[in-house]
Length: 177
View 1 (cartoon, rainbow, N blue to C red):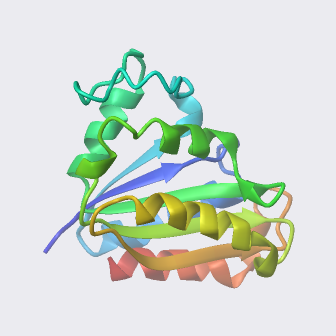
View 2 (view 1 turned 90 degrees about the vertical axis):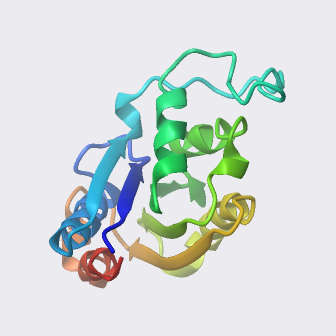
């Protein structure tokens, strides 16, 4: 069965290391007949959650920005890929802001297969906090299953991830969707 795959790239650098792994995942998933869309958060206008709870009864945020459309795509997808560079042992701010803004409809983001992609200049063991934060989000999504975690470790400059095992792992994970 072909699946709807939504890749959410939190990288502020187009063609940065985590974004390169997103492209590898996309390539693998498309080759096996899945419908894949990649969202580059840096290109969207998404404000921070104001914790006003205006969405409590309406399931719609009071802010009118690109998050409403992204939330709809997240609800409709079968597979979510959350990708981030690691800054100071955590996900980048763009991805965290997006996660916070799922509040109006996060309970509708259900039964998803989820993949994590993270890249850092540090080693994998220093990305544990990032993994825990991403798992904290997916733990709140009803029926979500983390299928794979792909770590591009020891990469700093753009393109360095192409010389790591993560480059092939991202492609293979995409094919396995």
